[in-house]
Amino acid sequence: MIYGAPLGRSISLDMDVKSEVIAQFRQVAQEQNLQLAPLTDDLALFDSGLDSLCFAIIVVRLETSLGVDPFSTSDDARFPVTLGEFIGYYEDAAK
Image (cartoon, rainbow, N blue to C red):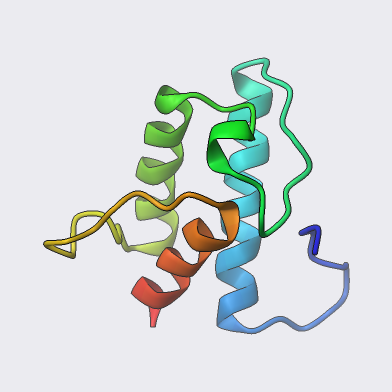
């Protein structure tokens, strides 16, 4: 599945979280002048085209926009490997 919220469609909280994550990935890539890989569930974050600074920026912005940081709320938090896992962390934390 490639992400992008269709216009005019009513979306759930999970879709709002997904949309915000995808928007932040795209915005940070654009701001850093980086080529972003197609955003699919199985995309390895390592292969996304973003670096560790980009992920730090994304996490800070998502904490501001969604009000959660799933990486600081768990004692055993590990960084996700795929985009689908990354989105899932935020969906779970936002519930």
